[in-house]
Image 1: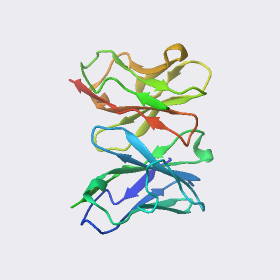
Image 2: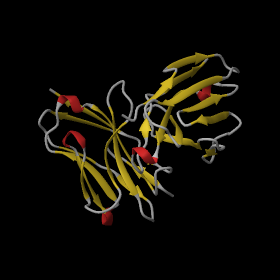
Image 3: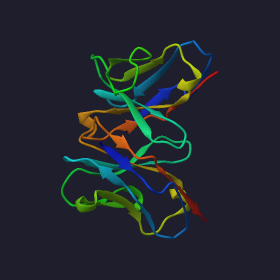
Image 4: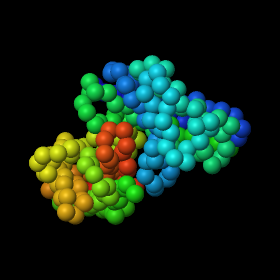
Length: 117
Length: 112
């Protein structure tokens, strides 16, 4: 149980275009979803936290107009990288949590590799 | 500032050797601590977690970790590693579920 999927697993896009990444909780309802960014050989950096039906809470330094997060349902959150640039190339990971799955545990998706050319 | 640090970037062990991966946290209040593992090509999975109570926490696959408040540490241990333990290990901590700080990770390579 508690499986989280991400789509796509990897994507290549041209500079200036927008890319949407989906995060789904497959077998539970996720009241909270998190988006992380991971650079090579570095830690996961929390970008934002989203609760279903509410606006996402962004971490300091994360541009909310560039990284649009929508958590429209209890099983789906999307991250849209708008007007992508090469410096946005990274590994994006989502996670989900729910009181029904146990407190203080996040279930992670497999990640999405974004390459902006 | 809140942070979690892992000082071992890459650890190489032979099978059956004992493992200890260091994790130190910097946080003044109540902290919840976690160890996650990421096997090659797979997503992060929870190994174990500490909220309160017994500072020695046992997790899956024979792993355990000890919370030592005086040392701000939460080191991961396993008495005898296997080749299948080859993976990246992340320590994480925070005041609650929504504010996790991750360490930079430790890559473990187990040689058969």
